[in-house]
Figure (cartoon, one colour):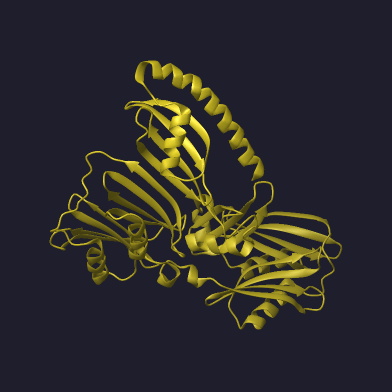
Length: 437
């Protein structure tokens, strides 16, 4: 972090010195402000220290782009090079609650599950890139996430559809039976790989370990290899370990089960109702060495208590800028409400944390010939939301006013609804229903 700030400071000084010469060239012809003058103008709009100034030429004429570092936020300003008028302002608030600490693997898993309600297949920390890599299985799809280890922001989200084979996969128990029918030994690990449409099962027999690849649809053994065993001499089979885990949590379904040969323990993950359990079981004695419990259902979008709601987000935006809401949308991937306000010739865009209500980012831009839809005969966005919720139940995640029509989006955890409501009469013009992505 310190290196980045120093680099910016150095860059700023270089850019400013370069701007002096360019500004001098322009000023002779167009009477533009110097970099020192524009810096003073910038500091009249925001408080802080100017560390970067660039002179650019756009269709509207010459403009300055100025970056200012304040005590609570970083600002990017666009100013008219002749008058110093503020044309655009972007505010990015510092994150004070996280500091330089990692959010932790469990928190990263919660963030991913909030975006996609499914089953975690893989979760690991990439130290080199400072990201958590999470894989989630949901229905016919596999989702891959990269989550910033410091901020918790989702940097990447990829969705892949499985082949038709995975839709008709045999059970994990059946795959183990097939493996044991080929190799009469003890199952050490068994895992389903939906992206490949196969089960990979390791069976130990005498001094050898056999790896079998089994077609998840047909149950046919595709490949079988053997090597000298490097696994521990476990006195407990993986099936026994799964039984121990299920008895410990009162039933449920096995998500994954593996033998950690280095530590001599079985790692078993179980889903039971609203909870997911992770257990470590001694591979020799069957003793439970570790057990963790985590609620997963609350990540669902239908749990409205987890979110402040779009109406509250609009109130927060209007508490900062008195104007007219032009749009309000819930961005599920980033976990923020995006609210736009029109006020006195400027457009303001806010990113608001969907759980805490904290304003994460704020942008301001001068706009021309704006139609604010500020028609006294229109119903309010809150009334439009109430009308929509009288038709379907769920959480309003988006509401836009355009051409005299409110477009309202509602999600209930299973379905996504899109309604169009006449802004004058309140009449529902259309209603569409689809499964959530």
